[in-house]
Amino acid sequence: MAEKRIAVLVVMDGVGDRPLRAIGGKTPLQAAKTPTFDSLAAEGQNALMDVIGPGITPGSDTAHLALFGYDPIAEYPGRGPLEAFGAGLETKPGDVAFRANFATVDSKMVVIDRRAGRDFAPEEQAELQAALDGIEIDDVKVRFKATVEHRGALVLEGEGLYADISDADPHETGKKILTVRALKPEAEKTARIVNKLMRVAHQRMKGLETNKNRAKKGIPVANALLLRGPGRHSDVPPLPARYGIKAAVIAGGALYIGTAKYVGMEHIPVEGQTGTIDTNFDNIAKKAIETIEAGYNYVFVHIKATDNASHDGNIAEKIVAIEKTDTLVGKIIDAVGDKIIIAVTGDHTSPISIKEHTCDPVPIVFWSDFIRPDSVKRFSELDAAFGSLNSIRGMDVMPLLLGYAGYFEKFGS
Ligand code: ZN
Ligand code: ZN
Image 1 (cartoon, rainbow, N blue to C red):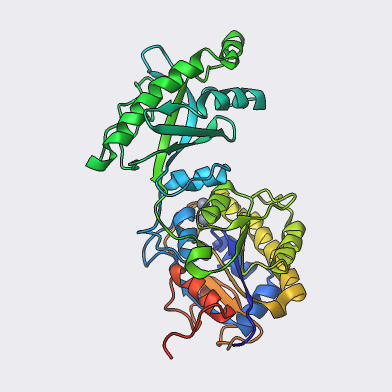
Image 2 (image 1 turned 30 degrees about the vertical axis):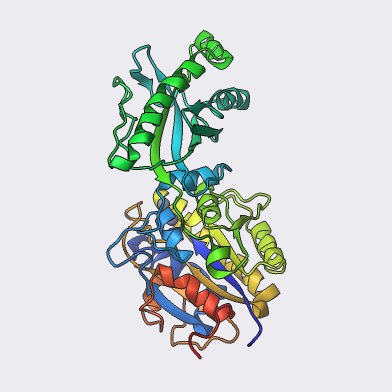
């Protein structure tokens, strides 16, 4: 068998766009100077790809699951476990996880402030976390981690837990925390535990030193938890078990790190990687090259700045983010181009004109120094439509990368 290559996936979040009058009817990808992407497109195989399916607008989490080779519909655990992993709270199959908020309630559990004033000092977060982490209700253990401002992640560990429950969050102030109901018979235990947890958390939180001080200063106290986005860590085999590969993630945003860790990737931190336009593109390139040379079989690099610019409607910033990623990928090709098979793409389209995700397919290019090229010469939404791989969807990206990289045995004899 031929030598194996390292599979590299570079995702520019929300990079796909539509033609914009302000830049002469071009898309940001067309307007950006992208010598590396264009040479990859000219020497590689291209496609305009539906990441989840035709007409479906992907969320970033489901889109990434698909790009990692998982069925984004059948194998999506819900936001909770992905956020928990991103927060550094690892879940295991059977756990149910939530996104959590500190909130302010009155003595009747009526919500007064859904974010409890939003600002929390690290000591305050630590005291609240210590009060909540380790709570036990019946045979279920609660794990909690405070993250940014009033936010956190909460995990329930125990037997027979399911995420099919209604919301406790009334989503409005002036309304009482709702009694959670099971949406499926098997989730009755979980509903009962969450309802008890709402009361226990309130009891534990209300008397904390943090809240006495906040009350004195006239800042809303954090005396309740609001939970949302429940999800159950299901029995999906992680990448090392599914494909026998050692995989790494280089990303700044917690949701991307979390989704990658959920499928068994190892997070490689990069100094200065922020998940915004201020991220350190040079350091990301250096770390990606190091990681490719460090014995991993698969390296995923995520750039968030393209999607942030799209949500802000900022054309110039989206173009800069694309150009800086082009330079970053150029450095990877120069250093280790003969060791890799690389795919460059987006997880969805986020048109500047819409400032949200849309269902338009995204361009993808596969390049290696041995791949058979198609007739596409430039990397853009319009050029990619003439590529040779146009039947693929997001879920096909991982098998294509690993197949070209040489990790699959011959099928049959
Ligand atoms: Zn995204
Ligand atoms: Zn987005």
